[in-house]
Length: 112
Length: 114
Image (cartoon, rainbow over all chains, first blue to last red; front, side, top):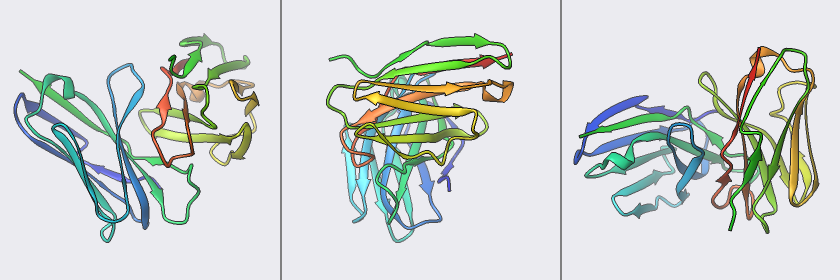
């Protein structure tokens, strides 16, 4: 079952912050985040494993609350280059390691 | 190193025709995925290969779809006969070990069936 992402779309001005949420109805083993620019392939951002860890990559970080089966992606001081569609992917606990199911994405537009 | 290579990048065909999409994964990767992306359904996993063996094809929508991986450096996704509802972007991705790590996606093959 697909994870649910919110919001579906968001528009930011440069320098503003954003949070993208991802929730699942299943117990999760891992959450993955990818970004896809228009007409391009999805590009990996990070993986979070159960254990409630938080990861960061420059000004993009994420958290994973395994009890709530939720993850959030935090983008701080957004840059024009952050524009794109962000996908969360989930692997359910007990599922095959390959069964990465993606949400429908959150379209982020950063404007000057 | 080259990334995942897919061909063709664009394919326009008529309903009923056979379509073959090709993928060359990153050398050394033992996992290969075929995904289909549409506006309505997002990214859907079609089939997964591990060490050239199909592990799960439950995402393949119909018998019209088939996939092969004859060796570690080549995979094909075939649609025969094609239908307009097959129009989508088809992505191939490879990784070192399933979804435990990063998936490297190819640029995709955009298929339009008229």
